[in-house]
Length: 451
Image (cartoon, rainbow, N blue to C red; front, side, top):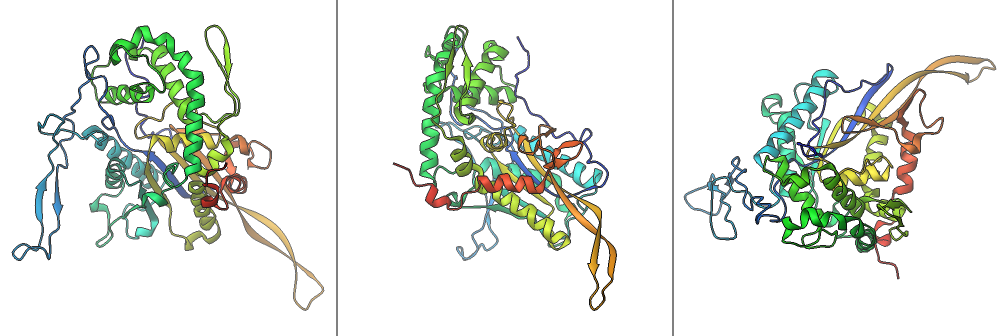
């Protein structure tokens, strides 16, 4: 029995960050960060004996906003002040009451801390970014169009480059796309075939994991109205995991059964398999036997349609930086997104640890340049002699990091596909080749459901 809920936050560790080997210069960084701590997206387990509060009064900051009304009022042309007040399902209001799925004060603090850690690492320690932001092109900030990710990114930016460290007139932009164009998540809204694949995948997981969850009924059913805990139950197992993890992250009392690694670990394994497991054939042992899950979800199709476009954006950005060097000013790109994106990225490169990504965890791709001397012989114009010259030849490497650890990518394991002696540094060529395989040539066409 554990006293602390597993799956807690993993802050960005600046002190233990492994500096690259001598001769490698950091050129560009792509960060994909999950939003901060939030309330559950639905009310679950609020009745006794679980008694997890339905209403969370943990949203006390930024409850007022400025609504511009210039041109709409003959007497007021500089705006009005409003105060946002949340009303619960019973028509009651309370100070600091949160909406479902809203970033809480704890989440705002943790994302701000993530931003200050980015500054401590890339500004103070590595001198990669300037202390004062004078050119907005150095950075790129983008979020999904969800309130909690937008607010998280606002706090990250404030921690990284607060107003006092920005030159006059330099205001960092937060970029948001329309839902139909979004690629920071697996876009089932715009890709019907991906939606069908995910549905088939979920159904396959139900066939395997519901049987494995049965032994938990005696321990946890009393907390969900006597119902069995199932992937497709009411509430769903994923919803139970969400509520328990969110409650624990905010200090609420969680039933002791959910603090048991054997219980919460099995729930997490089932939900993770439902959402992310893309292995072609997996043996899931039960206490008495084992079950084969047939290949229903074609992992390569899911990876292409789900993460291909996002990785293509990152790969193209790295290639542009490698080709143009100082003529391409962008050095740090921060994307505020969701747990599903982080897990999908890790699955795509076969380095997922099968644990649900914690709040404010991040996947990072770092681009490095190594300049090596190369001997070259050239034929001088108009002469029969050869001239021997030395020139600089650039090599580029990509390092992926998650939970403060370097990820050794299987696709770069072969000799010649990584920096000798440092397998975590994948050659940019090998990285781009893999991304090219995952990038749909006609995403719209491939998204049409197949008969």
